[in-house]
Each structure stands twice: as C-alpha cells, then as structure tokens.
Length: 356
Image (tube, rainbow, N blue to C red; front, side, top):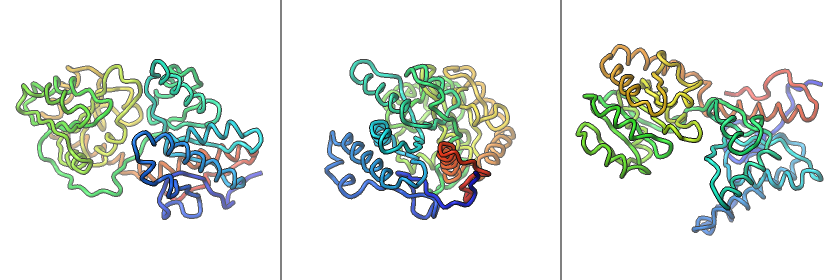
C-alpha cells in the first residue's frame, strides 16, 4: 500500500503557526507551565515534568496522527519515559528528538541521572538527531547504547529573523561560550599583525588574561545581537575547539559566518566534516594545532584574493535553501514520518512534506 496525499499531522513542541500549515499540531506548555512559579530557582525540573506529561497526554488523545518530533530536550525525556511505561497498553508513537547535545557522563549520582536519560533514548526514542558525523559513535561508546539510536543531519543557519550589516572592518573574529579553545587561538594569532576580536561571556576572565600581552587582541562580552554583528563585519572567522572536547560543536555559528560570506579557519577536523571542504570554502586543521592554525590564518591575512575566493565559495554553498531552518525541520519531519509509516506497514512513494 502506498500513500502520497493523505492529510496528516506531525506532533511537535515547537514552531510558529504560519509554518508547515496543515502538516503539524504544535503542543504548547500552557499558562501554568509558563507561569512565574516555574521560573523560580529549582523549578526547571518541574517544568520539564509537567510539559513532558502534557505532550504525552496530547499524543495519547490523538492516536491517528503522525510522529512526535521534540525540539526541546528536558521534557522530551519525560515524554519518552511515559511512552516506555504505558506503551504496551496505549501504544508507542514514533518519537524523534531533535537535536541531542550530550556531555561526558558525570561521576556519582549525577552520572546515574545522565545514564537514565540515555536509557530512555535507548528504550523509547526512535532517533535522536545529532549535528556532527562522529557524535553517534562518541555517544554510543560513552553511554553503552547503540549508534543506531542517533541520526546525523547537517545543521542549519539561524539568521532568518535578524538584521545585521555585512562588511569588512579588518579583523579576525572568534567567539562563543562553550567548547571553545581560546588559548590555542590566542597563541596562534599572537604573532599575526592583524587586529583580533574575541567575544565571550563564559570565558571572559581567562581569555582576557591570555590576551593581555597582545595589544592587537580585544576581548569583550557582547550581546547576541552584537555577536552576530561582529561576525558580519569581520574579515576572517575563526573557530577552535579543545582537543578533549567530548562532542562536535560550533556548527550553527560556522554556517552563519559562511552565509555572511566569511572565510573560515576551523581548528577541529571532527566538527568540520560535512560542513567545510578544506581549501575550497575554508581551511581546517586539527584541534589544538597552534602552528597549523597560525599558518592558515596568516595565509588568509596575506592573500586577499584567496579570502574573497573562499568567501564566495562558502556563501554559494550555504545560501542554498537546503541550509534554512525550515528546510532542516522539513527533513527531520519527513524522516520521522517515514519511520511512522514503516511501523504501520505503509510504503511511501515520496517525501510527504515538500513545502520548503
């Protein structure tokens, strides 16, 4: 049996009403779950519990609809647990978690909590989306689950709703708050005669201390809007991740910079896989490679023509509709729908959602 035109709905916990019309039902937290009470210290866990319960109950009351695709993570584990608990009686809906960003399993009781979340993924979640090619193997090894639980997809840009002024103000930019190796980057640019701007909040004190001997390096905390604007006006965008960082990182910021037409130097080969073609639309070196990063940055500083060539290649790639947020969500929805209909023994002739 094949299906090409049936009206269906993906159940989700996210999204604007104007997107994917007639193709999804968005479950909202509700006034109590969004109330000030839930914003009080220590109440975040209750938010996850209540919202997860609401998502699960709505799904139970809509047995003839499609899969559940969760964009938030905390309540998605609650949804998954309830599916596992009551699934034998009430049925088990296809559940895609998009995305899942994990850290190393913590010691002690916190580690038991981490393991419990991955147990839910292993027992109840059909696929957890990851943005890095190597993440499935990394997660599976750390938590003792199957790589088949995870699905790699390319990330998307996140610039659609923002305004900024793209140009070239003559500086190298690097920024971020998690999974950034500012020490390697600062050592790499310390001998390069070109202005450098570092934007961070989480590592402001350390980065400022490391950069203190170098007057051409500026370190400052910025707002989200200033962060985007500093990328938009840089000459070269740089990203460096710690050698021992658990997973891949930086895909969103990397793609945003490429969309703006910025030549990229990425010090982390794992995170670059599938995103940057070394020597074509960016330069890629190993994480922690100070000399390699310095050489790549200096090559771009010294060769304006190469910068322009890589800028154009990066922009040509990422300005394709494929990299938009809605196109990415469409791919995830279609993967979930395929899994949903496979479970029902229905063969699809083509993707069911083709809006973006």
